[in-house]
Image (cartoon, rainbow, N blue to C red; front, top):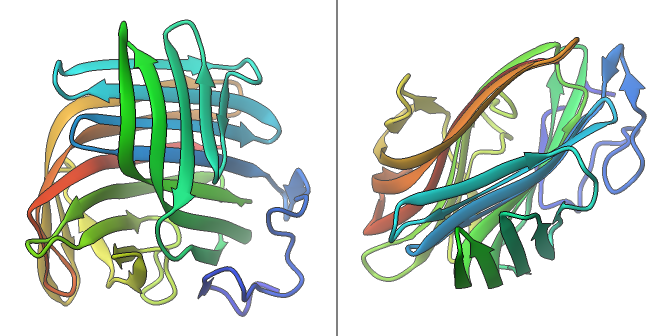
Length: 280
């Protein structure tokens, strides 16, 4: 069933015979536990935030972070309680003592769905550009939000040891076009039919393979002179060492400058870089 993978589409074409969301996926397959998550990132000039709900083998965890760029304050939290962080493709709600988030998410581009082989099994992801509107209360301040973002829905039976680098963000070109990007190395990163995507005014275009520097300061590209430079402003980081799961994760928020493949120049860019090493 995985011999036809990877497969990339807008979601209307899917590999036959594989259970994929929104269908129920078994908790175990091919000797591996199911991992699934929904992540929402919002990347604006005044405020940036992320929130996610994660399940590893049925065990839940959720996190959120809000960066007020005017003050430089990063407010963040992690919870194992259900119902506190609720992300999906249409809405993001966070209800904790430190933060209240309620955002409507409207589609702002073509969805990209990729199913790839991974280890002895397969993994799946769906990336959707969105526009977020609503309110965020964090750090004692109330913010009205009207900003671009990205929804990442992922699931699958990842290999026991998995590592990746990732970048997502939003910006503008000199002629005012809306730009979003999703760049990765380590998962869904085949030379073709990967999840790597640049959206220009909502139209999705796959990019050539990406390379990340060790300090996450630059993304460069094979067979393309483009380079995306990153300046970090604040960072969410966490390390977990549980009985059978180990995870080391850091995701700095910041600004981007430079070019994306296809000679797409940014006049402004906001978003995140990420490195994640997991033994799960």
